[in-house]
Structure formats: structure tokens, C-alpha cells
Image (cartoon, rainbow, N blue to C red; front, side, top):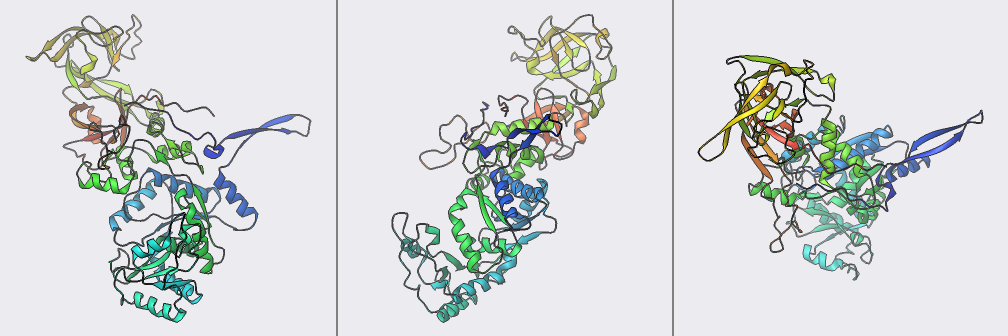
Length: 588
């Protein structure tokens, strides 16, 4: 898979945290160079609010709608809001914006809670639901009616859309806009008590139908919906709209800085209007930042749902997706995702980060933490003809040459081994330093062996490679009589464990100019996004590995134990990422 660099908007200096230097004069006349770290634009705004006394504390939140699984973009929102609270000694809430019962499920609630905790965003005991505040929201809606700021409207949804106008045409007032306060209170009570059919009436804010901001053109506040709610059951038959509920939730919880993505920028005047007209003291402040866009991935819930329903993937946590659950199952770590988000930066301008940078972050996180084990994905037999028949020995092999603190392990060695098929060639090209007739290589952690012959089956496929070993060349013995250019890995045939390995590529076809077909909008899927290898063999220690536990398979990449399908009788390993990348981190 070709990996590309990261696309950046060079005009936005707040994209990255930059280091600035200054020279300070000492009392003795000398100078000291001090290094300071500049802040992103959100931190600058928070500093300003605290300095001016707008707030005396910082409280943030992550407010997901429980209508699907979270993805990598949500991870940015979670980590950013949590880190702002941590940096300023504040608090962080997890709150579900569960105002649309037709699309919400308890399954999604539980998956989101697990994702947030896994990312390390500790909300302590501050787990809330918008539905916790439904009674207060109804009271605030009644307050707006009493202030002449809301009215019950009998227009249909289609009529409301037509009356709203567009960016070039002012809206037209509803014929029901000037109902009396008493009539509006009575009709809203009828809605609340279940005396109105779905779609027959809504409650709308009374703002300005000529506003250049279409969101301010008398938006709907409440609609009638006879739906059972995952948290409140059948207690309510009216539900608030997101634009009304969301600012009230923030105000009720004492949120100071409501961090959200840029598509809500045009909604900010409405956000402020609701918290002010509903008479909340010290109202929260909304600040928008750019979304995290990642190339060649699928994040849209509609598309992922279709992939799940069509059986293209095996669930919302399929390792080819970038839902947080999928990344966790694939073997990504919270640390690698945090590092990726840090490198992607905090900006007010949209830009895209390449998937290769995410892969770079997981490689960097795992390379010194995880043991390097031997696994053969495409095996052929290596017979060492002069090794004593029936003999075996235990060899001590370092777990990670770059990190001696990980120690070493004992690996059994004998005259019958398995090696990778591409570590032998009958007719090798130049600069091929692995096994071929007459060539000598080192078996990793073991001995030098020289190829003396090979066997083929009736189809011409090599099935066995024969070699002679030199007992004087044992690894760690200090032998320096000669050098070899090639080292290959192996597993002991009699003790190796048969496992299933799954190799992944991006689920979107990177070679296509368009991710969607022009005919029906369906996704242009990569037919090679999953390759399953059932005949791989690994060291016996790996049979005891736990779900999510990860390793570097020498020369094959980083792998982890699949949390869904792996069992003692059928261990399954997912390749997290290969070992090589063309991505280079830029010096700043």
C-alpha cells in the first residue's frame, strides 16, 4: 500500500504547538536563552476568559449522541475537551445528547462509555444524560412562551422548510406566529399530554424570519414523538430539538467552554440566544475547532451501518474501520491516538491528515514496548541434515534488542524448522542475501546454516529446504571467524503453534479517483482490504497471549490478539501495521 505524507494548511500557524525562544538578561549582565511553548487558539481564549473574570473555573464536556459508535474524529473532541479541563485544573463531563429516541440504543451508550474510558478521559462520577433534564427543558420552553419568545405552530415540516427561505430569500412568518401566550401555553400542554398527533404541531422559537442566519429563523424547539426512550421509557411524548437542548444542558451542568466542530459555528448565535433567553447566569461559551479529517477511511455512520448490514464488515468494530472500537480491536493504543491528534493540531481551518501518520504513531508507540517474536506466515520446512537426530536445545533470545529492559526468553531449536517461503529462492536475483544453493545465513538467535539442496512437489513448488549448520557459530558464543549478510527468522516445527493471521489494507480503494461510484453513490471498496492466513505458525509462548495483547512479529509487522474471534483452539492475530513507512515526521 502506498503511503503518503500529511496535507497541511500552511496559513494556519495554530495548527501545531510551536516552540519560541527568547533571551532574558541576568542580574550579572549575562543572558539566558529560555524556551517557551506557544498555545493553541482555544487555550488563548480560555486564558482571556479567566483573566477577565468571565469564569473562575474551567469545565468541559463531551456530548455524543448515542446513535452509533464513535470514530477517530470523536477521539479528537474527547481528548481536546478532557485535556483543556486537565490543563486548567477543571472538570470534564460525559453527557449523552439523547434527544432522538428513534435512533438511539443502549448498545451505543455502553460502547461510547467504554471508548471514553479507554482513551483515558476520566469523567469520574459525572456521567449525565440530556434526558435527565427533560423536565427543566419543558419549564424553560414554557418560560419562552410566557416571554412571547416561542409559539406553537401547525405548519407541516415541509411547509416550515418552504417558509424558512434560503440564503438569498428571506423567510416568511408562520400564520400561527402571533397566537396569544395563553393559547400557546394551552396548545403546548396538549402536546405534552399526548393530545396531538405526530407531525401535527411543533413549538418554535420566535426570533427573526429575515435573519441572514437561517438557524435564527424561528427554529423548532419541540416536536411530538410517540417513541419509547432508552432512558425515560414512555414518560414523554415530546422531545426537544438538539439546538435547543444542547445549550441548556451545558448551562445546567455549569460548562464554561463548549468545544465543538466548525459545522456548529453558524449555530452559535442560536446557542447564545437560548441560554440568555432562558435566563441562565454565567452562560457557557461555544468555541469551534476544525474536524479531524483522515484520508481513505469511512467515518459516516450511514455508510458504516450499510457495511455492517450488508455483511461487508463483521460489525462496528471491524479492524478495517476507524471507529474507536475498531482501532482498539486492531491493536491501536490510546497513546498512539493521542500522539496522532497532537500531530494533527488544533486549528480553525479544515485540513486532512494522512492515514500513514496514524500508522507512524502506533509504530513509534509499540517499537520499544513490545517483545519481538518469531512468526512464519507462509511456511516451508527447513531440515538441518547434520543436526543430531532427536536432539533439541533451548536458546536464549532477547525480547527487544532496542530495549534490554524487556529481558529475554527461551526458544526451542532442533533440526526441523519452519521458515518463510520467500526466505529461499531457487534462482535468486542480485543482492538477495537469504537462502539459495551454497549460500550461508544466520538463523536468528541460533546458528549459521548453509543451503545444500531442496525438494519440490509434483506442481514444482518447493516443500523442503536442506541445510548444514556450523555448531561453532552459535549466537552469543563470540564466534567471529566469518560474517554472513543475511539473517532469517524461524520457528521450531514440533512446538510451533498454528494460528490465523489477518492482514488489513484500507477498506476504501486508494487507487480510485473517487471513493464513491458516480452511478449510485455506493462506496468504492478495496477487494483486498482483508487477507486471512490460516496456515501461519508462531512461537508456543504466543498461544497464551490475552485479547488485545500485542507483539512485533519479526519482519512481518506488529500484531495483536483479536478480542472477538481468538480462542485457545484457534488463536487469531490482527496485523496492526507493517514495519515500514514512507511517512516522515517533519522537523519543526
